[in-house]
Amino acid sequence: MIARFCFWLAAGLLTFTSLHAQSSYLLRPDRVFDGESMHENWSVWVKGERIVAVGNATDFPAEVSQAEVVVLAGMTLLPGLIEGHSHLFLHPYNETPWDDQVLKESRAYRTARAVKHAELTLLAGFTTVRDLGTEGAEYDDVGLKKAINEGIIPGPRMIVATRALVATGSYGPTGFGADVAVPQGAEEADGHDGLIRAVRTQIGKGADLIKIYADYRWGPSGETRPTYSEDEIRLIVETARSSGRPVVAHASTAEGMRRAIQAGVETIEHGNGGTLEIWKLMKDKNVALCPTLAAGDAISQYRGWKKGQDPEPERITQKKNNFKQALSAGVTMVMGGDVGVYAHGTNAREMELMVEYGMKPLDVLKAATSGNARIFHQEQQIGSVKSGLLADLVAVRGNPAAVIQDLQKVAWVMKGGKIYKTP
Ligand SMILES: [Zn+2]
Image (cartoon, rainbow, N blue to C red; front, side, top):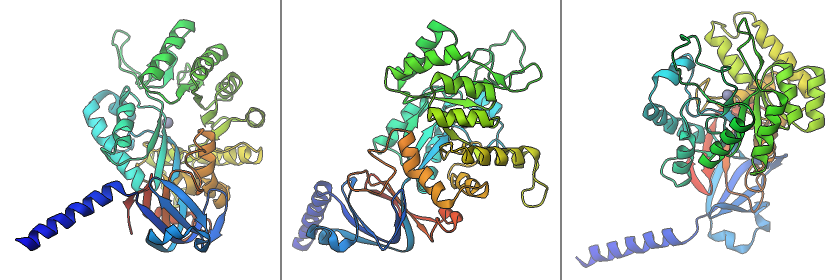
């Protein structure tokens, strides 16, 4: 009896200690990518939710001797990766077409999926996502984000757009009788009063940014044409900005891009129809491009392209040229793939394609960490392995600066000092 009593007493003390002492880890990978460059034989000391020291462990304060040592042999440690364009409330279109997801899937069903998607994303090493619209699931991204932040479910940090804004009549699903009211994948709003009210409502409900569709496939023959006027976009930007929030624009035509850039959006999503003039304008106005290469690659494959066997489809060749042109014009690249069109947890596909289309692996790593952090105004918290920042850290087997595919070999994941995955 006494032995058992002592056991429970000890267990109780242990629980008490672990609840009240800050966790402390000394991480020893083969190398560290700090968000800018690669460093061999660096160590990282994490205490509580933050990084406290980085570099040669012999230079760390004596207190580090009490830290739990985590040897990450054969691995590269990186800042937690930042997905620049996700839709946690969508799943691959070859499983269920977008129209059917919006029209036929219940909110509860979509949320259940989103919970799973969030976990897959985190375990793939993506500790933050900029989630650009629930596509008909209302403000459910705000609730998902809250549940993650409270530790109820595992998932990445979320920067959320909520419903997104579209010009009336321009978006989808379409193809129904004129008398039928069809739920849309985003909020329709137009004109002075309508736009101001919609922007403020989304902000009030929890939007971290406002996403607009500056063009869409609503031309007379179904071709992509601009939607909002430049004045409307400027009004959206002014309204959002006075609350401290940025605006980002889906845009694929040169004219849609031009209006959005001139009106003050911070990033252009897709940008397929960019021209030399547009790239120059983006560079001059410091507007970044989120190219979403993986979405185009996935959609072409859903339409029957057997990658590696069949000749390259025209739209892929065009996208490659467009990406190279933007790169050489000096446009800043966001790493964001429009994941949701393809499977959550395979976010690194975008990074592989960025390399395949002509970007250096180290530059792609930078874009997905310190680059995205800066463009999304998060650089004081995440995106680098630096003392004082949140301990969002990922270890992959191998060296992704040499072989970008090594990003698929995520072996260890930490978010805010908490370990979510171990080898
Ligand atoms: Zn998207």
